[in-house]
Image 1 (cartoon, one colour):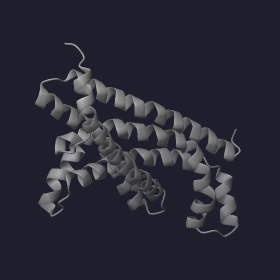
Image 2 (cartoon, helix red, strand yellow; image 1 turned 45 degrees about the horizontal axis):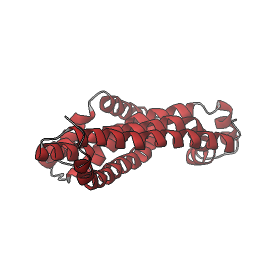
Image 3 (cartoon, helix red, strand yellow; image 1 turned 90 degrees about the vertical axis):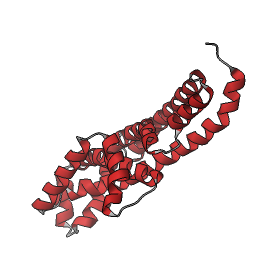
Image 4 (cartoon, helix red, strand yellow; image 1 turned 30 degrees about the vertical axis):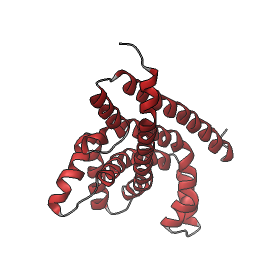
Length: 221
């Protein structure tokens, strides 16, 4: 089978539109994961042992089950409890929740890297727990966590094709549709692979550059 350039140019607008949808799904899911991941990390460090245990078990359960199952659960099981969400909302929530559990471990590692003396100094200054986290701990915990946070952003982008199972028109879903309509899969699948590569590689480079910038601003290198 030969490559057809005329067919490639015909399908390119649809793939570009699908790329925007993919980036939207990845960005929305990542935004949820970044915020919720920090909440989960802090919730595992409270003096309330029951809360800490419950949150830790929830995190481990979600990390130990497939993302695909969680997407199905949010979209198909949610309505049985009166929670009806669109495929877009279901997909972003499932991705956000799934990766929030992974990011919570990234945050936890960063928080635990802060020297114990910093906590003792905050206590000596009569700072509240919230003030200690906001002013001292979190600013020092973020730089070591930047690499992990960035890696999971790329991971989320590569996992968005799973949303096609609930009808989200991202790249893989669009490529499947184009191939089924025209009985040609070489061009759409190849183009999708190149698009993923064209986005993932620069993103990884930007993450490394940002990590160096943050560490330099914090005086860590």
